[in-house]
Image (cartoon, rainbow, N blue to C red):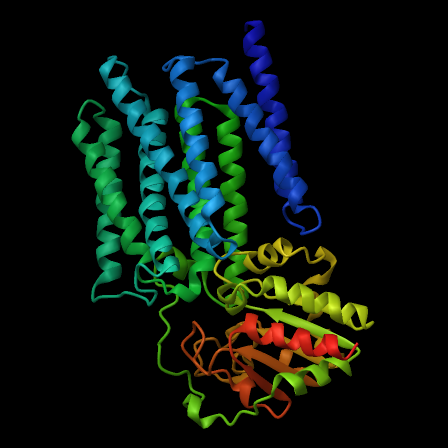
Length: 466
């Protein structure tokens, strides 16, 4: 082994350690930013080490590609709003799958052009990289479409959908085996590619927009698995490690999301997830719920007299872009010596950690963000719970209504507080398509209107009381 090869191996080892440490630190909000930085440094080292052994492309071509991609990335990053991060993450997953698929196809074509027949191990890795990468690509594009509103967010189902998916998958496996056995025939791999792209679409369209957090986690795992297979094709150790880390962590996160929504991982894998009705859920129509509306002035007096407040953020906060005024409300309450914390449900928002990202962007202390398991017992001793744009994650029907599609889903115990104030545009149902019985509870008050506008008025009222 030459000196250059030893240096490259050592750099890969350091990069791998940084990946492992970085992902470990991403598990806590207090260390997530440093974990992200460590992982970024690890990736930079891995890229530098890989460039030291440029073989197919010249350094000029690589430099031009890097400059062009960096320019595009910066342009997109400056344009994307924080509320659009779920869509961006979906695209990231898709690009990862596309990269694995294209690398596998390129390697397969290059080997054939050189008369280098891949062995069974490499051939199998090529087929699996194309299969998983293609499913990730088109599945992520569908997820992006649903999140951005370009595709109907409802579950799109048709008769015989699952048998068709099973048949297509079986054809893909058989054709993939033939591609490994007869590597000179490029048609087999072409069939695998086309059917895999189709499978990605068919497995995501039956999943409703409410269940996108689970889909994004799963597709993220797929992108890592595809990268791992690509590592075997290129015989690149750091790519194998990084792909395995992303794949395994994505599966773990998917399991957490499923648990948070009381769903089965098998249903997600089979593409039968989130087929909730848009009508009701066993609790009657929304008109059956008698609500008590509260004005801004009365709400301000309730907050001013409280000693403890828990804020429950939801996707409605993201839509209204109210995170900054929520931080201003938090600072104001803290100045009044009122204890303020945020209850974060694992599936609140449109991707895992969505609420944490929005609140961190508005400079709310990480110590104020508390996970559901750690804060649920505290609701009963809380004066005011302020629900901002959340719906299904605080619906008590999940505890007792066996006919409800969210029955059994762990929820935040907001209804147990002394007073609940809900900031909501209207009485429209949430993503599960059912009304929230909390809104009719005697301790619940509805603050109707755009969250950003309503909370701004609330803050102004509280300032006048100082």
